[in-house]
Image (cartoon, rainbow, N blue to C red; front, side, top):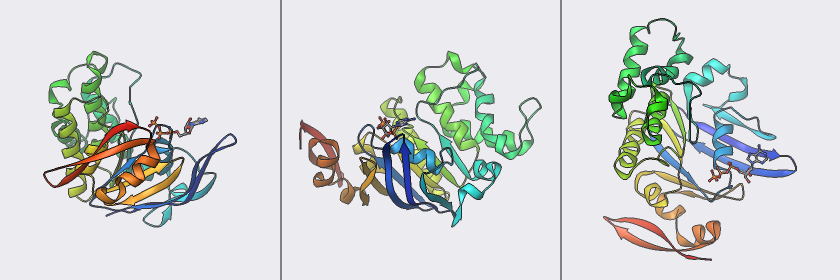
Length: 259
Ligand SMILES: Nc1ncnc2c1ncn2[C@@H]1O[C@H](COP(=O)(O)OP(=O)(O)OP(=O)(O)O)[C@@H](O)[C@H]1O
């Protein structure tokens, strides 16, 4: 059971302030969706949460302990990060790609995996319906197939926290729904799941909580129907949204340019 928090987090790139005083905490058992227009700071926030970037001010805490003080190995075991459009630089076999998720647990890919690592890899492959790709090289997979294997790599870590940057961007509707089910299952087993999304309808449907970022600030943070209300997202995106209610879930629909 973990809580990951950004405390008064500031990120500057050159003279620009990209994240300004971000104060958010992410808890176990929940899927939190981070949404916001292009350039609003979603990837930057996830990279800071993952410990890949150092803040200009403020800090990230895992269970109250600043992550900057945790060793890289501990951080990698406890926080899994799936980058946007993740790719691999070598034509690895699918199973070996997923096994990279076990490196923080001491796996060495030059030797046969220990039983518990091999089991975690098989579990992750099954969860993304990826067994058919396990013995193929990943350069021979479609972008969507590769995206599923990248998600499996992150799942194989079996970390307390899963940070996923646009994990459904290249997936067809069936696999996008499957991936969201996988992320929900991760939260149901006690995980703290934080995912950036462009599809506001999907965020409204499957997230417990939505954070709207705009210009590097939190514009709204709450249950989906509250955070995604038109007054917030019209201003954030510069779009006039309308809403439809499907099966009791309010779905924002981008309707016109200009709020
Ligand atoms: N290395 C960098 N140097 C300068 N500016 C940067 C750098 N990385 C990101 N930025 C800027 O920071 C802002 C936030 O970028 P970020 O990638 O976090 O946005 P995002 O919300 O994830 O966008 P998108 O939806 O397009 O993926 C952008 O304006 C971007 O141009």
